Amino acid sequence: MTTIDLVSYEDALASYDPVMGLEVHVELGTRTKMFCGCSTELGAEPNAQTCPTCLGLPGSLPVVNAVGVESAVKIGLALHCEIAEWCRFARKNYFYPDMPKNFQTSQYDEPIAFNGYLDVQLEDGEIFRVEIERAHMEEDTGKSLHVGGATGRIHGASHSLLDYNRAGIPLIEIVTKPIEGAGERAPEVAKAYVAELRELIKALGVSEARMEQGQMRCDVNLSLRPNGTEKFGTRSETKNVNSLRSVERAARFEIQRHAAVLSSGGTIVQETRHFHEEDGSTTAGRIKDNAEDYRYFPEPDLVPVAPSREWVEELRKGLPELPRVRRNRLREEWGVSEHDMQSILNAGAVDLIVATIDAGADAASARKWWMGELARRANEAGTDLAALEITPEQVARVCALVAEGSLNDKLARQVIEGVLAGEGDPDAVVAGRGLAVVSDEGALGTAVDEAIAANAGIADKIRSGKVAAAGALVGAVMKTTRGQADAARVRELILERLAPKE
Image (cartoon, rainbow, N blue to C red; front, side, top):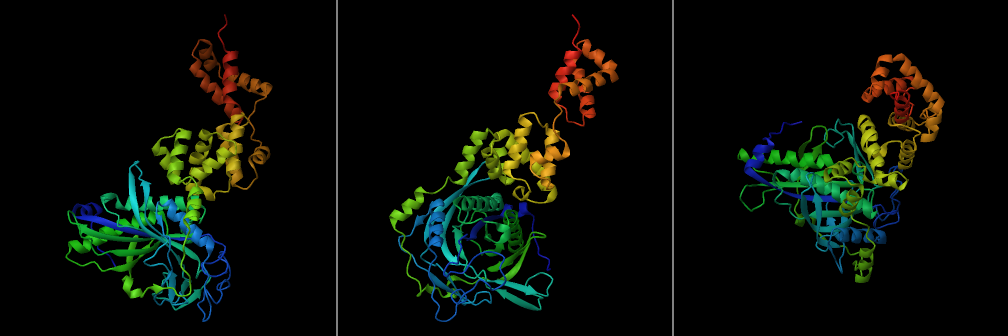
């Protein structure tokens, strides 16, 4: 890989002001494609989910997916956009092997939603408003598989394979207006925006928005201008970035790269860029075409889309609670700080905690286990919390067993370990491993008496009024019972037995 000159991030911001534009493609969760009846289900054999329409064969005619239009309107409304009373599709003409029609059915100058905004919260609680230029409907392309090279890209490959199963899957492209004024926080703003947008899309139920599966991907447009000037610089477009962390890293890298080029007297080339996960760098793709190069013209085979105002208002009334509003409500209900709520959000634990509470746990216990033991195990496994082999209902049962005194925290951690290992539900793990708390008074009394006898010096201290020394005897009993005694009850029994004689 060619070495790319960079300047330090601090030096870049000392001289230049970053301006961003973010284009996010969301793959809708419809059962069928945007303009035909082919299935959108993942995992099928290559080219098994195709038909004359999505392959662009002569004589085939498209029909608009009504659920796709409804999803687009919902997204527009949630982004505070105006919804067009009349709009139409256009043909975006260009050749690429994974696009069988040699044009993409999209929207150009007449999008279904426009002029909106999304408020995003940064890690320190600051709210930054990102203005939305448009949200429009279009279709996805097929997938190219480049074989024989070291990188999986076309350069160096011996041949390429094409799978058109994805061709025609409904997409919504959400385009921001130029994002100005973020300064050194521009990469953080980019990440926060995509994160908030993902939560919004999931809340609407129009897509699972799984970035790692390509259901949501971001193009990061970035340019620099000298501090104190107004004219935008030439932009680069880093394509198909598919994680929140990568969005932030791509923006940061491009700021440093642009600054290095400009500071040395060079010129920024308007081009697409590839992002590399392994080191956070970008490399050149192709020279970026201007809109006129695509020869847009209205799609002659599709009628215009004209959402009635009554239908739009009906959809508006049916919108769910938006993510930021919901988080603020939950934060107040749970009694946590904004910092703690941000940590819960970053961990992907909000919905898991809510589901655990719905299953019967109290809020404090649900947060404790998801953000403590389970977060630790997810981190060790290098996976997301939601990917752990334990359900909110199972975590709620662990909470209940602790609350009723059947488990202490140490034993509860062992139960969670057993559930994650596939040993069954919490009750089955407790039975299988013999983990229930020892609460039998006779057994506890015997263990306490043995501890007192074995630690006469400590017992004398307690008799003389130094009750703090009881902790050592509690520890001895816990050791004898393999941590399965009720520590609070053990302490009570010790103090009863060693109370000063009157």
